[in-house]
Amino acid sequence: MTLKPAMLTIMYGRETDHSLVGDWDGDGVDTPGVFRGGPRLKAAGECAPLNEGRSRYTTDNANRVSLVIAERYGTSYAKFVNCHKQWDGSYYEEWQTPTRIGANGMATVGEPAAWHTYKTPTGSYAVTESFGVYNPGTDLDYRQLNSQSKWGGTRGVNYNQYFEGPKASAADEDMWAIARAGDYRLGVVINHNRPPDSEIVEGMGYAVFFHANKVATAGCVALTEDEVAMYMRTAQKGDRIIMGVRSHIFY
Figure (tube, rainbow, N blue to C red):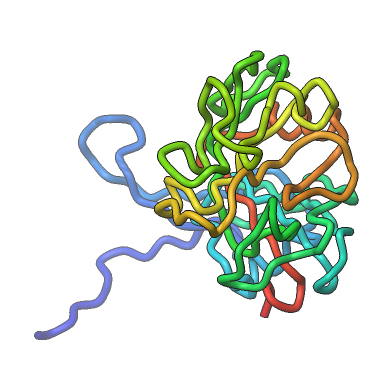
């Protein structure tokens, strides 16, 4: 095949412009154009590893990715970082705050998490639904808790799922009682060991939430109620949360 030289060369714009071709005026004829960026990019901060391909876990191209970073195993103290995608596809640090996780720290990969281990699971998880005693305004699926609200920890049909009715055993969580005590006044479900991320495996952990009351937990991620409300107001279904010890989740 013989390559022919270009019929027309156009010199226009800046070195940082992106050249485009399209039918801009709807006349059926493609013409050249340029894209000259968008708003000034914001600093990546703690979100830089996501942009640099150094995250061991997927962002799944989510609009927002929250990071829960512990500096070592065995500590219940961690950092919560909310990363928001910019016009060029990179993430910037929207806000961060200290957080508390499981009383026994982060679980290692494949180790059972939450409730009986008091460890927070490691990995990347979807965020799709929320709950509480009031809705601060969220695009996540929202469930208003009531006196019958439970979360299943008893092995069987309700394991790691919401249900209403009497507890089958002490392993089931009384969400209403916990809400009245403060923790579940607002919460977001982290889809660990449950759809859409995975099938439910009994014994691998349940009731992993992002909730109010910033103290050491049984495996959840805890912020203040105001911080949970701020997260919920900007969250969308399909956002993700990546959790783990820094030396493990980042290369």
